[in-house]
Image 1 (tube, rainbow, N blue to C red):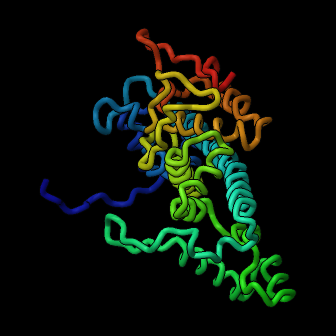
Image 2: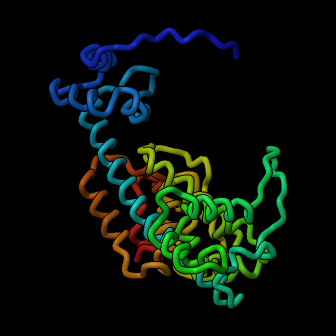
Length: 315
């Protein structure tokens, strides 16, 4: 397709509001609508318009601006809920990573042993992948930081060897994305299995889930939309669950509800008393008019949303 010049000009908030009205969006309160356009932006809200426009740039008859705002607010609170779960899981994953490697190898400083990691290699796009060196660089930067973490400074000031702090200090420096990278870079499959076993997941599935958790975590951190989004990095399907899982109708792993099911499954091991179900139910009840089919909750042949709470995972 031939490219063309971008010709759209910036519009004042008042003109943006009039444009929405011209496109047949019902606006009951101009002052409130302008407040959202000023505080959120027309462009950010526009991602929520699409399901309400069968024709391009024309809203379906009867669409109200408040519907858009309700979906935006729902999505924001869904992000906060998902982000909170990821935070809890990140801590648990790091803990199990450290524990499994340290205890099995009887080595507080296993992260400094190159033999635990795959050799450097070039990935499919020609980039060098070197998990061991990447981990060592993170540790080195933390030690030479002008204002290092308190626990890193304490180690440097107190001990002269080994040169690096123990793994339970070093891995505290890693983000969930870096943990995912280091997990993928472990050489021994048995090491991966020991970590994944705690969460009742096969190592290959766990590796995929870590990658997806990293991706969704970054979406949440950058205030990106979860509602009506196809995940670019979808979590692998759990074909042989050890614990309770969801039925075949709930296997759309491109949508965020499947990802939320992944979080719930992992939290059953990491935080058995978690209140994810209650919080999710409360959110759905708060916004009863938000179409949750767009997050991946399926419907039956009559178009009725299936009762996700009756799935074994959520009971």
